[in-house]
Image (tube, rainbow over all chains, first blue to last red; front, top):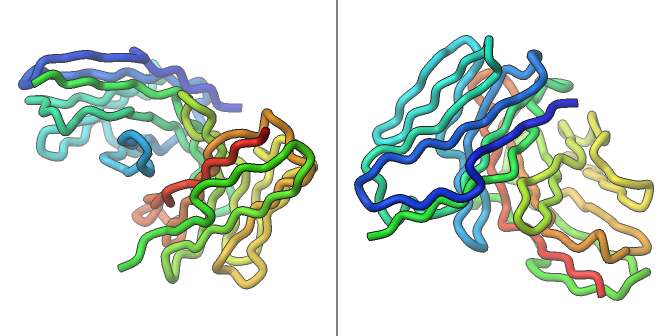
Length: 114
Length: 116
């Protein structure tokens, strides 16, 4: 089955700095890569996703890059703000019966210091 | 509109008890997913429905776990003879269909199960 490794497990930055979270996956059949943000005690919420036919995608301060050959993808957050503090999960998904089944990484706890 | 809802939000069970966890997906969403999230971990896939059909149950950890969605809307995850290792947050998610532009999964708030 798929195996997703996520690093770092904890990331502490100053407000205004950039943050980068990296994930690797093992199964070349994975073709959809969502990123979720989960605040303490809250539900995971999709913040950005990328499909395997695209190398990069941006949405305001958030960007995701994908290297299919190396089987790794990264989340980049620029101009971090205290409200960006949360746990971020990457996932690698494969199609199964008409939908995508994700395998999640173990999460990165991002702390943005004001 | 209303998001995915789950009940109860918290459940404490004695070891050996049976529990039933409910998920109400977003109205009209065809696909429904169940995940188990242990403390400090990412969600782990348990099972998936498309309408009332259970298309993948490869993540269910044992035959004590059973899920159903009889009318293609509300789903129930049942755990029989609960064990301490079943303690986790159980997340439900739904998505509109599963096509290329509608794969976004919307998560519920989860049910935190504690087995004593």
